[in-house]
Length: 194
Image (cartoon, rainbow, N blue to C red; front, side):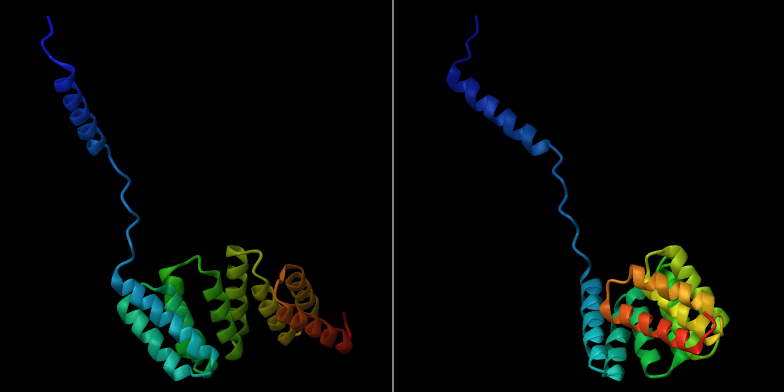
């Protein structure tokens, strides 16, 4: 005969259920980024805002702080490279883009930016190689086609230039980039030979 009364069984069952529920593996909350990474992102964002205002030295200082906090922050190297390029410091820009690429070999935008710096230096072969790599990584990168197109134009390779500029127009979602490509094609047409 069972001598357990319902009043002793119910608490036992509830305790068992509570223990079982408590033992279930709860999903761990998503880890938040370490404070240094968050601070690096804030410095990077401030650097971008300063660069947009033409305050390149201050922007570089912010990117430096971002990189100091997170030495593997490819985006901060890329952005600092842009600030250097806008100041005409192409070798420093290329060094930063190269570091961004070292940290993230699939970073198409860093290849485009490095290609732009090479183009400004007149190193067209390296520029085209970087634009090619960016297009391999991201075949829809309209700016890579535009930049390669104007580099081909500078080299006198009109057919290649027009093909890239037309591809840019098809891919571009930026009106100013589309308009720039159209103007480049029109300039090539007025020069003749296409």
